[in-house]
Image (cartoon, rainbow, N blue to C red; front, side, top):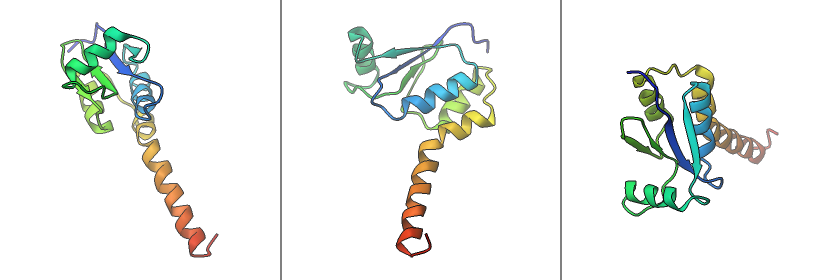
Length: 117
């Protein structure tokens, strides 16, 4: 499938999942537009309509009209690849960055508690 039209990414700056999704889209060189639902009432209403009244973000709308809400990195990668985009390893790693950082913080806390650090 050709990717001529933009993917719409609805989000807001307080959502920790928006950054990793934007990172994957950018590294896959996907043509997308980010819309902050806290600054655009029509976008906020559209997100609510897609998500049964909830302002769940990130919400993505693809050129064919299909949507993904709060996708895992695997779900987003699969969807982008189905659209013909190449998702490099760096994009997948960045998408997992919050999980990797959390695991590292927990590991450090455990090691400190054990007196190793």
